[in-house]
Length: 261
Image (cartoon, rainbow, N blue to C red; front, side, top):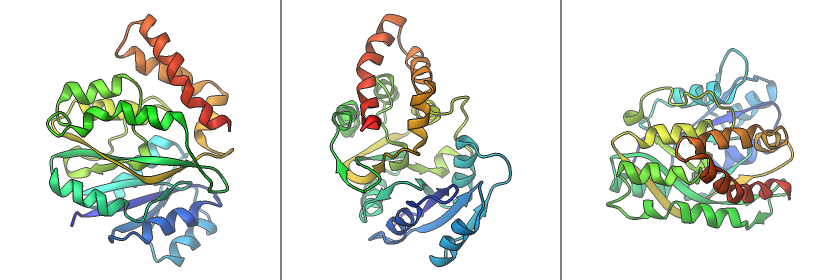
């Protein structure tokens, strides 16, 4: 059994936080669970107390990079999943992680497929999910998943990895792995840097995670002010010349429609 922590990142008084906490506390395989925040309040603290979870507060202004690094560093276990407060995990998420990580101990990061849910917890299918599954297909081949050119090649077509689904191998990756100047694409840039390291990207092709899209989501805000689009253009430019970048962005923007429903 792997040594694992779910590090729940909490902000303000999210109506979805308790459902997220319950989904990781009630896993079919036991894990350490902690709650981390840079916006301390009675609501978050009381939920941590209700479920008897360690509660960590980061001083300073809230930012995704600083908050994710803080949560990651507090884990204290070999593996950690950074849990976003809006999202829900299938009860067997950790069960399958344990099976795959025991089989592939040289894994740098492990990821799963996911489904999209809205504020009413209604499950939606979206063409972007199929596209991202296709993007990750090379990682399903065991002898390819640890090859640098394959890991980078997958990333060159866009960020097909859903960040909250990822389990990080802390003892291989080290501390404070998020080092980016981006706000939205910081996870994509981090995955690209990790892909350059020796080790495996383990892909579990099962829907073990539910990604919630709602009006208050960070991604929706980034889309409105074009921040997401600009950062993704810059990421594609790391791999491709301008004409190819424009073509890729044309198709990549299909995924934006998920946030318009």
